[in-house]
Image (cartoon, rainbow, N blue to C red; front, side, top):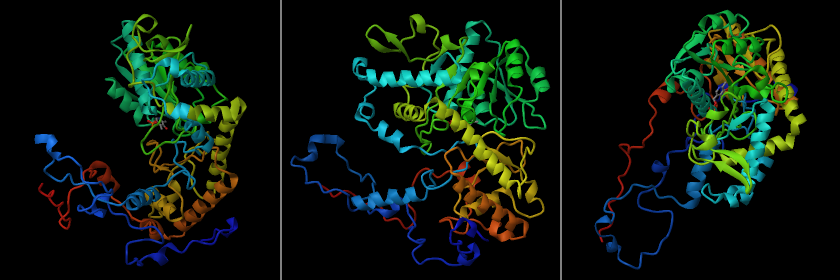
Length: 526
Ligand SMILES: *Cc1c(COP(=O)(O)O)cnc(C)c1O
């Protein structure tokens, strides 16, 4: 395999390192890492504390009798454990992270610097509002930018993820229907290609879910939608651009049909990165849409950690938005928290306090550092990068929707692997050996063996070339019959093929002492 065109020494042949095992379980300078409980002894602690002056008998019956089973490690041992674990995670700071639908874009360090300003970082959510005016102003400005960019009049900032935003949007829609005496509307329509969170959210709110068929060219089937828009439909949930990376060209007709049927149009805005600054969802007739700040607005995704999914709302839904929200009062900015007066119809709230303040600061810093023209360029470059990948990889791989350009992500199917004995999963595992995180696989479900690649605008042409050349070389190897390179991959990762289904279905979440674990010694008797 040659990658010399990008000026890097060739990787050692994967097969050549097969059969070599280090004596310690380490790999290069990467060490095998046991669990903290297996690492630490029971007989020591990480800190030296003088024996307490007073007898612990003050505690009476509450005195601890059993050891609590915490492993004892020194400070460097503890620190190294966590740093080593962090090295086993792939991160956007290490390399391209081409997960389609996830918008894994660079998290600018400027955002981090601003979020660490003491005036933001050290706030307490229960502080008197007279002392948090700056933070409220930032939230107000963020809300203003998001409403302007989407062309929507109202916003709920508190939802803490895209899926949480979907929940917020559907609860708002439910409240609006109930207020209008339309509680009998109990059905939500979702296209076949939808992200799994869409039907899950609808079901969680108590709605039944009906699928809308998709056309040959990967878009909502209008005739099927029209037929299914019965009087019991509360809302449709449509992603635009959709999860096939395509713009829903009939979006105006979709919203017209939906409103005509008395239903609301929930737009899954997770892919807003492709159209920010170019298209305003409010102009398309959208009633509610979540925005993933951790996608479009560059805040970190975290390890399932702090995302933020503000929801913009149409005039019709605004009165039902959850508390709190900010108003401009005579004494400055104020959070409306009580369900009285203007907030009487609010359906409740999505969480305690005011949402993910740290993410608000980062997203706002990102918006201000790009400016409105810069945000438009974000969308343009994200789409350009995806089309560059689509064009280059089409030399060896089969695009799922070959006609016309894609939006911010390029979708391939597995037709090109036919007859090779290699699956999408095998191909993805071989990418790990080449130093690339796999793309999103087997999603959307409507495309066989799907490979969904989203580069985002933050990758350079040089990095895109490096990625494309690695994938093209792998594709050629697959077609040349190098089956084991794929079916045995990854060869170079610390762990090889894992039983991912078992890990997901039966995760081991609690550590239990193994047969060789030395039991914690009982506490020394007083
Ligand atoms: C990421 C994503 C979601 C869910 O967002 P989370 O923040 O992960 O909850 C929903 N829909 C689409 C299309 C997405 O890409």
